[in-house]
Length: 150
Image: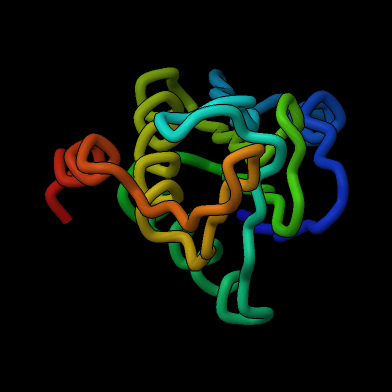
């Protein structure tokens, strides 16, 4: 299992190819790719900025991945998350889960994203024509996370 923080471009297709390589013992791989949007409830977004605290943020990603690995019968997890400036259309996060069966892979990926969205140690700012604003997880994000009851 791995969790990586990267300030540079995140190539989801390359991450998926690497995750799939030599994977003969698993019956399922579920992957998720999160992209930066060009708008939000506040209006147009020119850039998303994900600030982080070196070491602390990586440990939060690792703890989230470990939590999914302990909760679901999976064989491997890979989380790659951007930090710094992310332009609309660029990949923010890549998650892949390998398991013997599809249900565990799907559920673990869903769980990972709910926890990453609400618990990963990032400070997120949207920059656009109207200025900049710091953003927090929404009530919907918190409700999605709460359904896992842990």
